[in-house]
Each structure stands twice: as C-alpha cells, then as structure tokens.
Image (cartoon, rainbow, N blue to C red; front, side, top):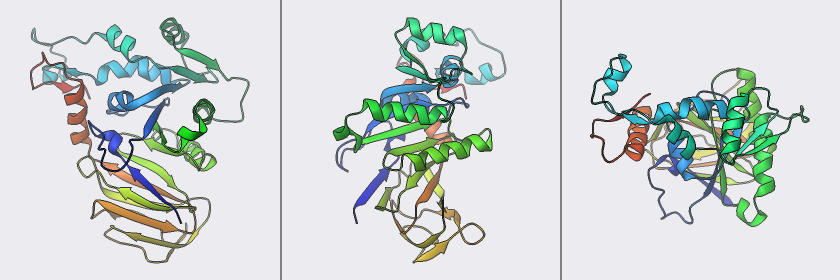
Length: 297
C-alpha cells in the first residue's frame, strides 16, 4: 500500500527541503475569526480564496494581526508617541485575495467593491444552494489546477473550526467529499485532516509549533483495525468506534507517526500558540522596528 506523508511545515518560517519537493499551497479563508498565523499561511500560498464572508475577515481582521511596538500600551488603550501605527490600507493592498467565491449572503458590498478595484476575481455562486462555500472554493481550486499538479497540492483552510458546530461538521464533510485532495482545516488551537484508508500514512511532527496532544477519530463508519507508531498510547489492530474507544487526548512522543487503518480517520494535533505568535511576529516585523514588537493578538 502506498504511503502518504503529511507535515505541518507550512507553519514554519521556511519549509524544509530534505523531505522531497515542497508542496504547493492554496489558502481558503472562511467566515470565522482568523487564526493568528494567517499572514504566515498567506505568504506560503500561491492562490488565496475568500469564501464569501471570509473576505470581511481579511478586510477587518488581517491588519490587526501585524506587529506593532509597545503592544502593552496598545492593549491598555494608551498609545505612546513611540508606537508605530499600522498602515491598514497598505496591508489591505498587499494582502488582497485572488478570488472571492460564495453565495454572497455574508460579504459586505464595500468589501466586494474594494477588492474588485484591486483586481480580485468575484465569483457569485448564489445559484448553488446545495453546497457549502468551502465546497465551492475547493471545487474552484480543483478545476483551476492541472491534474499533474494536484498530487503536490495542499489546501489550507483558515477559520474552519470554532463557531457553529454544524458548520464544523460541514467542513469535515468536505474532507470526505474530496478525499483524494490534501485539505487541512485550521484554527488557532489545532488542525484536522483526513487519513484515507486507501493509504498508509506517515505524519512528520513539527515539534517546535505543534503537539503534544493529538487524536485519531473514525469518521463515517467504525474502524475495525487501526495500527499506529509514535504515540504514547499506540494502537495495535485496535477497533475504534463512537460508543466505544476513540483515540482522543493522545500524546505524540516522536518526530514521526505512522497510521494504518481499514477505515478513514481524522487526524488532529494541537498547536503551541505562543511559539506560533513569535513566528508570525518575526516574519512580519519591519526591520526598523525594535525587537520588542509584538502582534496585536
């Protein structure tokens, strides 16, 4: 059985090249609070799509994720004369989505007009009420990506977790609908991706930014047999099902996890939020700023 390798190297300032060719990333932004590391994802992606109201989030929230001096004063609403103001328009100009797609029931007209004037493609899919905005955006990426490039493509979805539970389940369902695509659901706290049963899976742990808490969860049907290595509580031909055992609150103990299962599983792992915050600040901080700059998180 073929082995699929997974890595969260997109959370690192630079992507390691010692594990084969670097993936090609596309970013989808949903209508939930932006993860603190969204600017980092933005710099890694070759295509950035806002799903409907996700454009509001980029317009309103993205400038607030940038570094600023004297952050303690900012948080106390006491701006000192040494504070470096954020050029909001400059951020919006530089971080414009390539595409806004959805049924357009959430995105504000002023946001559509602003990005359209910057050259963003606006795709009104309001005639399709049978699929979610995430589904529409993933389908757009699939249709615009040549078949030869799809095997190396990874779709990152910011704001996919949190908020309404039915939205989260809808997003997880998209993982199952596009099971041949690599799609990673992201929040400030963790990621979720699908491990299809058609492959063995190798997960390379980026211990500087993720872990140690993790989980393996059967999705769609019970898993009669799952075997893992690299976890504190490894599974050995173990059955997992709702109403029985599922491997939540597990711990990664190595840099390499292997998973083999007869049924599809969800993999989730926690993020080290403070370290990720530093990664983003170091990436975005202007050289003229002092090393005490920090993000407005």
